[in-house]
Length: 310
Image (cartoon, rainbow, N blue to C red; front, side, top):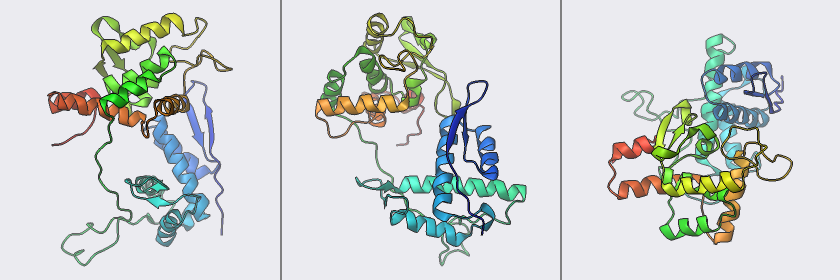
């Protein structure tokens, strides 16, 4: 039996675009295919999902069966990779949404290999059959159930405490972009100096989720904080066109990373004495407050590029 031992390798190509490899030819070819139609974060997530799957299953793609897939779910539930399966409304272990996403990544791989003729069929079941299979084909029980939960938001006092705990104008500006503009973390990191439209009090989102672009109105407080950051904190020697850069250390002047934003937010949350505060919660706090203030649902959806229903 052939054993697959994937190793996640990240690099950049000659044009500066991120490249993700697993060291397994079939998997790397699939990642190239995914990179041609998805955003870099999706490629990275897919690579990690495949790495986890083949590390647990320890078989070559052509040898994987439906039994292996079901065993993978069981291994995740039992902590096969050091974590446990959980529902979205609990506080410990691995989210069932994550396991479902991993199964989607694995199914995508085998769908690709099936079309190429590398495997005879896709071993990931669509679901478990029920007694109503004849009347309702392909309406079986999902392999992993996920609950539909409302997004958590912060109270006005919690937002003020979080902003007050920010140590720099840069940190405050990033928090304001999410809390008052509804921007995603990746959209905040993707902002460039040229994307600021100060006179219009708007920012241009060039690299939104799924590659979509939009123009977002943001409160004057955001631009005031950005102005103070550019005047007092941003290194004059920075060669990056990113709006938010590292202020000190070996990477001073380079574009801020997602890990850096999370570290900044975690520090502000602890200093503010809050039990919870994430980038996603700040974004949904903004969109929820806009809806509560009377903004039309269509306008809120355009502001945050979300799919909400009533």
